[in-house]
Length: 393
Image (cartoon, rainbow, N blue to C red; front, top):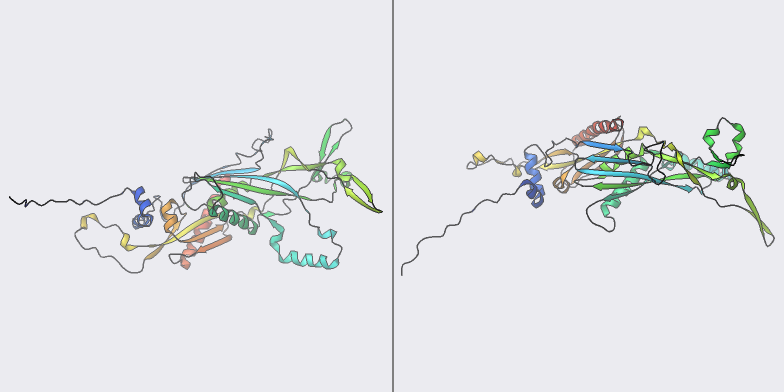
């Protein structure tokens, strides 16, 4: 029996993946391959930002001041699109009664003095914030994620310490609704009667109210970090907020009733509701000079081993510089590959004048050098100047 001397041959072919598939299998390798060519997976340069488009106040009840939609409770809104990501911000509000006594109501001189000392030292106590709720849509239902809660809390703290909203701007200047001689109703507001001393005493009330603002921020098509996008959308929406005028009925402003129980007497005031005017509103007075915009950056080491080799020199030995990897600065992180592979980040909130409200450094990977911090601050100023002009377009 003749032996079969023929050998079976096996052909081996290299496995290749499309860029989008490689980015999911090995995002860090995909990112390094792009960076070695001087571009990023999103085809932007290292320090290039995404284009931003905004639509302001399109969802508010005061879009048409002549025909106010009474069923709409949105006081200000913004739709921001950056790349593929869309952020929708809607601001609503409520009214609460202030229970804390004012300094004029304090009888003890010691409490009066202590109040003044505390007021001078704690400047932040004179400012208020907005209560945001961030929802990042991922096609799932259930409780909010840790990321959503963290971003919401960070937005609240950043607005408070940026000193954008003063408590004085949120105070309600309540009017009084009265019945005229002909049986019609009219509402008188304190600021409308400043030049009329005859009606000044009629609108003085011991009870005080304040507006409370809430923001619902919905993120669609998330492709990267979203805090800076949520912050910028919130800044645009805040600048167009209008507060509805509020009033009470005249019989509730002065009506008192005396009761006696077991030889003791007490005077109580009738409880009443404060109502909002369906058509009249006032613009929210904010510290416009403190309006700032956020931008983010990442620092990553450019790995020389991940550089693409020249296909014409496959047979020759390629000398790879094995020295320490060179860190590079990436502006406006985008795509899953950048977010998951870049661990050292810089977050800056600044305005067009170069005043910086917040600077956050997270060094968990590549080394953040002082030169990179200076560069990110300069880019943030330019970015804030560009974003501040979008509202007037």
